[in-house]
Length: 308
Ligand code: ATP
Ligand code: RIB
Image (spheres, protein in one colour):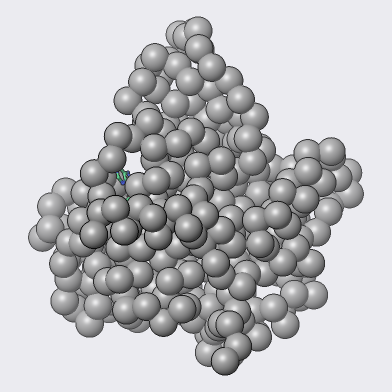
């Protein structure tokens, strides 16, 4: 039997992470106590989570023609990712994210697209075959929206399962949502997509129903430390996450998405795949940074065995 093929389309960023006691107010200067540069970007983080948790994954993405862009590509290769669909864009910097992390482990992020902006529908044409031959396509919203739309449409027409992590939050058209098989918003993203605030189970159920009516079969609303609201065919339930000492939630959602899709492609039932993804994300929040926090498969399996 051949291993199912996964395509991830998304962003690559250089994360500049500063730890501070509390977020500055407008006009205020805060002295940070730690700073580091790390590899991130929602697309790359999710691709790394897939690679480290055991998927056969090809990543469609762009870096700039700077030194760090080449370093990132080399690192992605060691994370079990096929890198042939990653392009180096001339005279363009690699994408950048400025991230502040407070004492509670919460973060605020602003990003500059850089080379990610070059992943246009025209650029994507040379990689259509990757999507057409994949069993699943995982995407986020840090790439140009028209490209994500075209990729979803192409995937749908080739029976490639489309999983969308709609982050960062933005409204999406009904036509776009009709191409999506599985959607994984957090509470804020679910509210922006549906207009329903997700503060309790009733809100989550209502938001999920709206997304089902737009044609999406499975809705997973991630609820941070509380876990996930999982809804299928109009029936929903909370699947709790694992209790851990969180130090930094950067890329928790990314790790969850990558591990979930990997497990689904292996044929695990949805609830089991969510538990696998919860374990991966729980490990990630106990570590600092984005890709530096993403666990390998043996770590996820040991964690699950300890918590069984
Ligand atoms: P982020 O933007 O911080 O990467 P997100 O907002 O996309 O995350 P969340 O809903 O915060 O996504 O978290 C995604 C998943 O990560 C959760 O469903 C859970 O599995 C795990 N997780 C997040 N925070 C915690 C925590 N404090 N303890 C344990 N697991 C957590
Ligand atoms: O989801 C976390 C990621 O969001 C960071 O790595 C940063 O690059 C931003 O894209």
